[in-house]
Amino acid sequence: MLPENYHAMEHAKGIPLNSSTAWWVKFNIFFTAPVLAIVAFLTVPIELAHLKHLEEHPQRITPYHYVRKRKTEMPWGPDSLFHHPLVNTVADE
Image 1 (cartoon, one colour):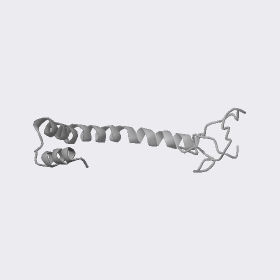
Image 2 (tube, rainbow, N blue to C red):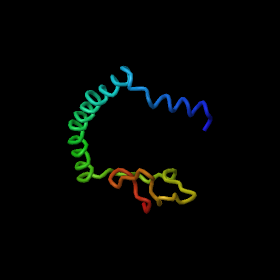
Image 3 (cartoon, one colour):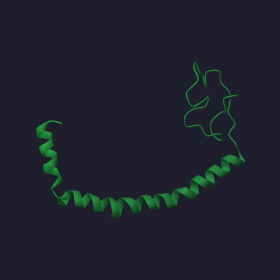
Image 4 (cartoon, rainbow, N blue to C red):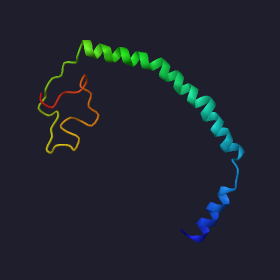
C-alpha cells in the first residue's frame, strides 16, 4: 500500500458520517425497505397463481430445428443455467 493511500485510509476512519450519508442510510431503511416489502407482498400471490396455472396447463413447445443447438455440453448440464421445467423445453425433446 502506498503511504499516501495509507494516510488517507487512516484519516477516513476518524470521520463520522456526514449529513448526506446519514440521509441515504435513513432513506434506505425507512423508504426503500418498506417499498420492497410492499411490492413483494403484492406480487408474490400473483406469481404463485401464475406458477399454479403453468402446472395445470403446460405450454406447448414446437421443436424447431434451430432451437437448442449445443456444440458442447455446459458445465451445469444439458439445460440452460436458468432452466425452469414448466416453461423451458427439456433437453431430451
